[in-house]
Length: 106
Image 1 (cartoon, helix red, strand yellow):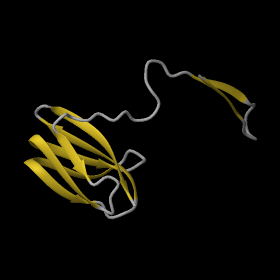
Image 2 (cartoon, helix red, strand yellow; image 1 turned 90 degrees about the vertical axis):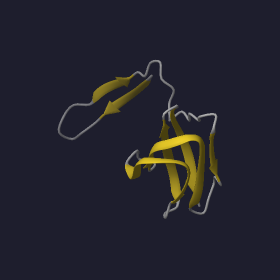
Image 3 (tube, helix red, strand yellow; image 1 turned 135 degrees about the horizontal axis):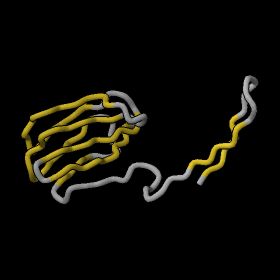
Image 4 (cartoon, one colour; image 1 turned 45 degrees about the vertical axis):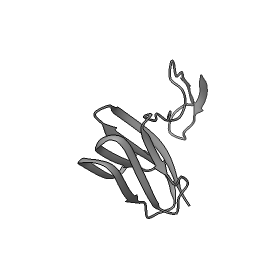
């Protein structure tokens, strides 16, 4: 629970209470048992190896925007390059499920 007061020169101050129930703060990392992503952290090039064909790969920036997407790859090994430094989230989807993994590029 968080309590905030919003103030503006155009309206009276308003109290706002935000309550988050049943959900952890942040992004929980899910990892499939047969998934290997290395190196992490990296200078930019990442290997993704899976025991199941990868159907889709989405790359999100720290703000949650999709920066790149591969669909229908069906590969069990991929190499991707992340050009800019920062924190990224890779969502890897296979027939067995999906994984969300944080990757750091320095």
